[in-house]
Length: 342
Image (tube, rainbow, N blue to C red; front, side):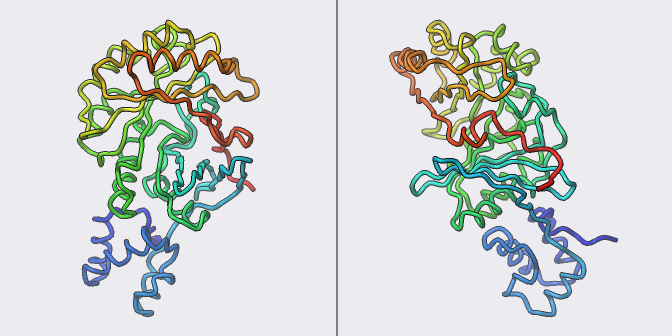
């Protein structure tokens, strides 16, 4: 029988593991504290434990870790990490500093099956789902690499989080419960998997919700986001109107502006109509081009005009200049899910 990966265990699983070794129950809490708050990568680092117990644990368990295969730093300070996984695949995470705020954009899958036309990750297809400890492990790894705690987490990297539902939910509980990151500082972004969207608030901590919308008609959304053929705008917005929001919380709508596709004043007016009655804010993201893509980014005056329509109708709308574009770390540019070779 192989060794147990301590990081793969849930909090309950850790209690069972400790119990199975005949150890007192409080050892589970100690070990979880060392892994998730102190960042231990081996039992030898858990200096609170007696040496004979450390040795015993080393004989029956180990701790997996993400291996840093590559790192690129943007001129704006954004850092992109390529992490190797145990099976030889790899994922990318992006660390974005902004004063005291340190935001980490994490992945939930290796690749993505959503095939959104403007997203480079979607060109890879789906290689596999990440396990909860691989999702949460990106936060632990980034904290060590940054030398300070990550303050905000966005599940906006590679993959569709709600298509890896159980592991994503478990990872969120580890972040909020074991790493003590406030749910208010975590945002999950989805393209709109409606059945999972309705199930999510019943199972997960009350993190922020962001919807990757990017179109105001089914015709355009069908073209750029195939998920819309299964869950069209009417179905999606019926679900969003039922979504239980905490007091003073809003749903964020992400809208990637594509030149000549979804950036007209009529699109902006339709967006106002779609969001009517939903506590919301809109992040307008001018498209980040990459080699071989059919789309282009809009002109600045087009972006400003689109924003003006939204704000004129009383919506909160912000233009997000994506960071890290020079190192392919901006929105829709992640694609590091191949074989993990340096």
